[in-house]
Every structure is written in structure tokens, then in C-alpha cells.
Amino acid sequence: MAEQRRLQFYQADVFTDEPFGGNPVAVFPDADGLTDVELQQIAREMNLSETVFVFPPTDKAAVVKMRIFTPTQEIPFAGHPVIGTFFVLGMLKRLTLKGPVTRVLQECNLGLFPVDIHARDGVIERVVMSQPNRPDCRSSSCRCERSRLFVRSFPMSPPLRNSLSSTVPMVSWCSVQ
Image (cartoon, rainbow, N blue to C red; front, side, top):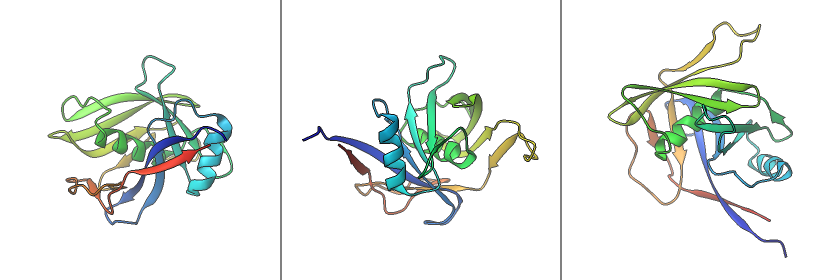
């Protein structure tokens, strides 16, 4: 029998201030060691528009490397998964927040892109991300002003303040064989 591993993941609802609204994304904050086949199998099992896998960066300037998968393929970049991932990483205290705005670089399959994390008293209120220039984009940044992130995780925990609210809090696990 193949060795089983347990992976923690979070499902976040982005661009909403209502639980179970917005655009959901699954975030696996510790994906190092997974194969490309496993990444695609997990994304297919999640069956969301996007699933994000977070890896250590290969470029020293970045804080993380993100790989984004749909149920059928890896994609080079998408906006709401970046915003949801940085809210989750902030909630997990994996980011060092410096003042009211912290700029970090995220690495994806298209290169490095800045992400500005706006926080008050250590609580993330907004994430502003730059995205690759595309002819169909009207702006070079995607702003998440009033969006809320609803993180589902076990066990129950007290509600998070401001833009980070918990609904049915749980830490979810995915077994990989």
C-alpha cells in the first residue's frame, strides 16, 4: 500500500462580505513535495474554479511561489486565487506585516508580481495585487476593497475581525496516496 500523507488546506470565499458567497478558492499552504500529477488530482477533487498550491519561492525576491490549477489544467495566473491565498497566508501568520501596507512579491508561472497587503493592528483589511498586462484588462491592479474572506477550518475558533471572518471554521485535510 502506498504511503499516505496528510495535507492541510483552507477554502476561502473571495470578493464577498457574505459567508458562502463570492468566489471560492482552495489554498494548500504547504504543497512542497507534491508531484504535478498529485496537484492536478487534488484540484480535480476540490472541483473549484481554482485551487492554489503554495511552495517555497525559487526567486529570492518572492515570499512564495504559487501554482494555480483548475479541475482540468494548470493555469499561469488568476486574480482571485492570489487575493485569497494572501489572506490565508496572513491569517496563518506566514507573512511579516510591516506597517499599514506591506508590499511582497509573489512568484507564479508568469514571473514575479507585487501584492500589497493593507493591515491595521496586524489584521489584514485589503489585498491589492498587480497582474500581468493583458489587452482585455482595463487596470494593472485588482483591488479588493470591501471583500471579505471567509475561511472554513476545524476546530472552531473565535471569529476573525474585519475582512477576515470565519464561518464554519475548520482545518480541512486531504489524504494523498
